[in-house]
Amino acid sequence: MRYIKWLGIVAFLLLVIACFLPWIAVAGPNISAGGMDAGGTNFGKPGVLHLILGVLFLALHLIPRLWAKRVNVVVAALNIAWAVRNFFILAICRGGECPDRLPGFWLMLVASVLMLITALFPDMEPIEKD
Image (cartoon, rainbow, N blue to C red; front, side, top):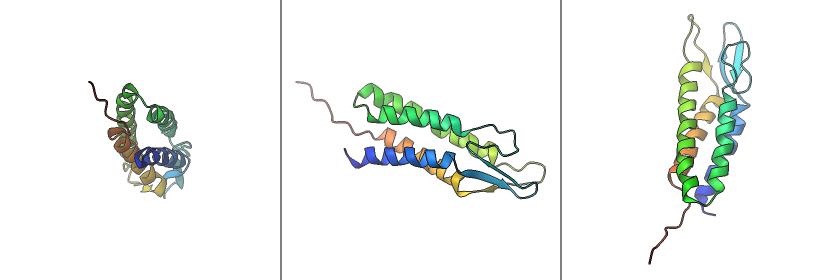
């Protein structure tokens, strides 16, 4: 396996870790919200979709077929779109209270970008036709 496969696996593991860490903290009402724990907000569990897309990404990442690599680009793009959506929805200022972005939030974004990069550059040998 080349390093790009290992980078994809590490990115998936970082995403799983980030989903269980707190993402934002609001100082006024003392609220901390993360991917799997909304903590007194109405955000639900945005980390669940990250985990579903991450497991699908990992499965497709390890299958050595061209169709799997193509579908994996779509899955990674959906994952990064969900990450950007979470970035704008969760970290916006509401009612004069601006949440602090915690390291788990940034780790989720970095892991999603790494997953997209590894999906765009798969570990495939070119097929030569005679």
